[in-house]
Amino acid sequence: MWTDDWIGIPYQDLGRGPDSYDCLGLFVELQRVQHDREIYDPLCSVGEAARYEIAEQSKPLWREVSEAQAGDALLFRVRGRPLHIGYAVSARLMLHTSAQSGGSVLEDFTTSKWGANLEGIYRYVG
Image 1 (tube, one colour):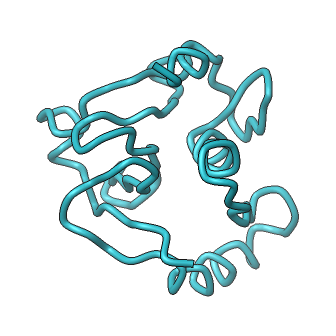
Image 2 (cartoon, rainbow, N blue to C red):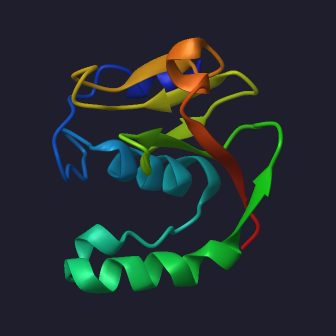
Image 3 (cartoon, rainbow, N blue to C red):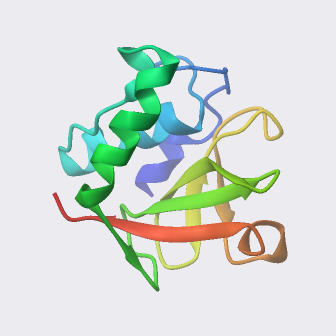
């Protein structure tokens, strides 16, 4: 499976690859490699205050959907806020990374561990 090459890459806060990633860095890179999409990454080019404004402007590029398919964004709440993103590999599996996992892993996001914190599933509509 294509995901084998992406499993086990170390986690690093603000990591943008290729040797380590954080969750957003991995998601942006997978969008580029798997779908030839250049997803704007606000962490790479602007100060913190402008990131939220840019994120708001990017919302029209994504539509919330009820079931995941490959390439969708899976947004999860952490401490009550939407702070973690995973890349949908299928209707049940995601590729993501976190400090807790220590590196990129393939997991079932419908389990109680993740499903209870799923904020939404978003599909790129460009």
